[in-house]
Length: 214
Image (tube, rainbow, N blue to C red; front, top):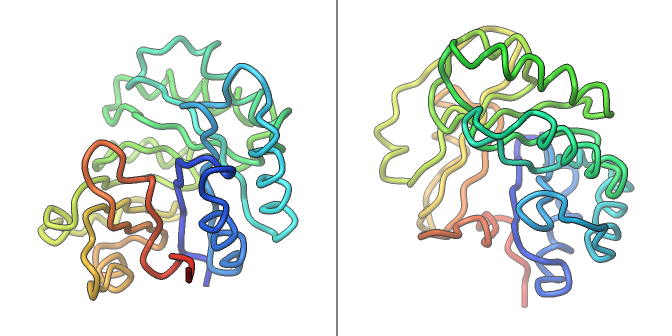
């Protein structure tokens, strides 16, 4: 079952075994977030071009990362990032990070969604990191309604949300022996990622179940 959404923010030339493990896990993946340089960068990166081709060849959604600064980043800059992801890496979706959660900003994101679809992003993932206003379900395929530590996640109350949109939970500081898949289901998420990483860069690690054998 395709339940894993993997944001892995390491360069393929530095962590080739980890990227190999991601590609090999294709049947289990909802999608992979591609993030060459806190976005697409200012020119195509050949290593990311190659890994994106491999992911698409394995039938995996490629989601281009861009930061929206909770609605404060100008819309043309965000759309330009998404167009580069599509043109350079063949991304077929967008992972919008730092998305506002209140209804006041919805119109901004509604316009962003329309522009994202226009440049070729067929799948739209909004990373609120918390429970958003239900209106965001109107424009998203996936709402990230939790991002945080395993300790905080264990205390999270389920939020069922509107029908027709998937919830995703992104969890870090996950110990060996934990059951993040079971907890994700209990918390209402059909898509998740749970990694052992901690600190400022937890998404430089893979879920325990994807770690390559060395």
